[in-house]
Image (tube, rainbow, N blue to C red; front, side, top):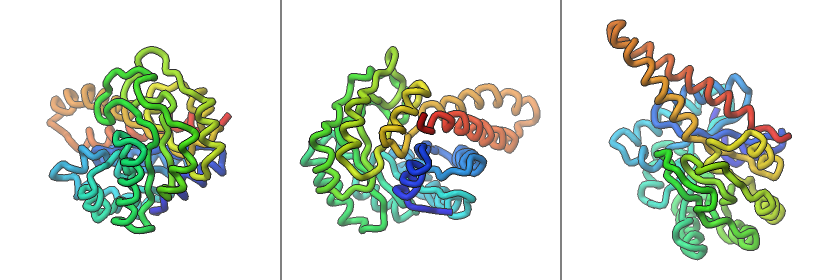
Length: 281
């Protein structure tokens, strides 16, 4: 069943956990994600990256994800991730996305706020909006090496005013988290996260969870993170499986269906493993 992203996140927080949000480049992965969420009995978010959304098949993929969400046994939201192009945002919402991370984090506070307000005016009140305050470094689609101190950290003194002015439904924070692969041991600023959580009344979002120790993730959930985005861990698991499965499939008569079925199962198992760390201590 499809549900609002903010409702999924608030429900997770009420149950002492965070909702998982997983980047899906294809339907086989998405099916595995929803299958894992159904097994766990938890709501989940299917993320679509802007790079995927701009592909020739992007519109059709979002429609397929929307159909998967509508018929799921658990609450599912389809979210366009890290988008700043209002035309793209409009088209992907038309295709079936019910939530958007409107990302103006590279435009400074005023530019960020202005972009979110334009998106709200364009999309209306029924589309859930997430924004990022501060700047999380790295590439969402490629696991580049990034240091924890590479981004611009979220200023707790700005958080409440930004949420009030923008009317966003969720707020993504920069506390030392990055997209991609961490250089050395990741160091998150938990005191900063606690200070942000104390000033806002919307669920917080942690991006760049791949590679974080389970105890670190659980601590962020205890501080009010209601949604956690995962890409690298899931993508690596799928790619590694394809490297191993493709030769055997070719030798067995090029059976693509068997690869797709096992592909979904690898995604399911990886998502279940990742979600184990999403419950507060």
